[in-house]
Image 1 (cartoon, rainbow, N blue to C red):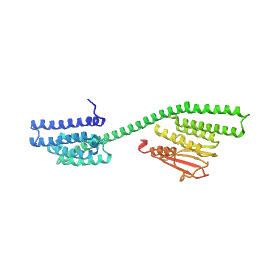
Image 2: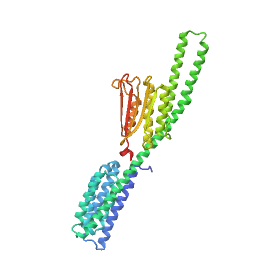
Image 3: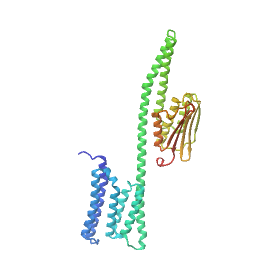
Image 4: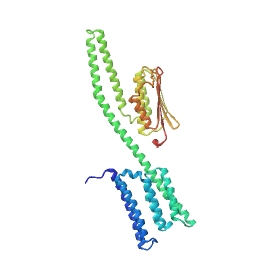
Length: 386
C-alpha cells in the first residue's frame, strides 16, 4: 500500500489527537450523566456531543480535501470550538465545571500557527466567553478566575514563542546547509577550473612562448608582435581564471576582517594602487551565513575594480559599525562609468541580492573619470540577527 503524501501524514498526526480529545469529552459527559452528576437531559448531552463531533468532522473533511486549506480556515474553526466549549462549560457547572480545561488543547495547539495579534485577540475573546460561562460567582473566586486565564494565556504565548523560535532556527539551518552545499559545489568547480582550463592555458602559453623564441631570428616583426599579442591575451585569460578560482573557493574558516584585508592587498598589488584599508577591530560578531555573504560581496566588488577601474592610484576598503548598521565601502579613483548608461551585469545583480537578503541596501556611485564607490549597509539587529 502506497504511503500517504507528507502533507496528509502531517495532517493525520494532528487530527488523531483531535478525535481523542472530542471522544474523551463526550465520554466524560456520558459517565457523569450515568452517575447523575449532570443537570443536563440526555437530549442536551446528545446535542452537545453532536456539536463536538461536527467540529471534528469539519476539521477532518477540510484536512482530507486539502491539508493546506486547514490552516487558512484556522480562525473560523477556532471560533466555533471556543463558542462550543463556552456553551458546554456554562451548561455543565460554570466555574465548577472541569471542562474549562478544553480551552488548553485548543488554544495551545492553535497558538503555534496563529500570528501574535490574532492569538491575543482570541485570548481576549476566550476571557469574555469563560467569564460569561462561569458567572455569576462570588468575589472570592475572581482571583482563581484570573489565575486560570493567566495560566491559559501564558501557556499559549509560550507555545507560540517556542514554535516561532523553532521555525526561525530551522530556516537558518536550512540556509546554512544550502550555503554549505553551494560552497562544496563551488570548490568542486574551482578544482575543475584549476586542473582543466587553467592547466590548458598554461600549456598553451608555454608552447607559444617557446615558438616565439624559435621564430625571433626568422619571422617578421609584425608576425612576432601578433604572436606576442596572442600570448598576452592568453595570460589575461589565465589571470581572470585564477581570479575566478579565488572567488569560487569558500573562505568559511577565515575571519572576515582578515579576509577583507588580504583580498584588498592582493588586488591593490596587481593594480599598483595605494590601499587604504580601514576595518573596525573587532568587527561585530555575525552569523556564518551573513559573514560568507559579505565576503562574496567584497570579492565581487574588488573583482570589478580589477576588471573595469583601469589604472587607479588609490583603493579604499572600509568596514565600520555605525549604531545598528554595519557599513561597507569599496571605492577607487579609476576610470569610472555612467550608471545610467551601463547595463547591470550578473556580478552587480548578485551583490544586490546578497545585501537585500541580509535586509540591507546597496548603492553604487560613479561617473566617467571620477572612479567608482560601492556602499553597502547591513542591519546588525532585527529578525535576521536574533
